[in-house]
Length: 295
Image (tube, rainbow, N blue to C red):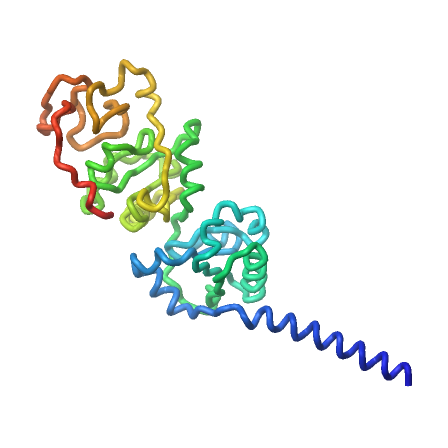
């Protein structure tokens, strides 16, 4: 009798634990692949989601969702600081196995994330995938500050915004004029190239163009300059005050080696007006501000 009672209690306890486990996974939101694909294509809607690919780095590089950052499942707990601003916002995780996705949801939920969904596996849905690396603002900032690395930076904003401040050595790119892009790029296709814009949309177009041209290490900032407060450093050539622009509000701290192109060669770096072949000048004369344009 005592044995039967003990057995009944044990079975009840096991059943309770099983139900608790089931309720944890069943309560997680599921996002169909078709829905997530649609979100990724919508330049405005994608701003409401942080998408995380929790596969290993090698699998991620073979192809991933356009605006998805890579945080392998084993590194989630150590990467919370990078994504902490999303605790109260929508987060979507995906993988190649459902059990990994559920583990990631549990980890993020325990870390205080309020709205975490699991998306359909990449093996079960034909997502539109890209091969350049998408970086969060904080990760992209690390690259900007790594002056020892041989990185190339492309700024895909309009000229007025670029001239108010940009990454050290960055080249200003017009997303509508990519036919001549190859001419300003390094011949070595292995050189890391980092691309950024206002919202990460225009820069993603340039990033894909770079992949099409055969470049292997391309990085796009999913957080644009309107979404993340980047600390733009002055290029090495500008660290000597004698090389910097003097008396110019728009070009303060810039010099002719800061990555300007398409008619910027030959600009004057003093308060004195000096025209070049493009008709531009670096005087204190006020220019029209086109910073309101969104890329």
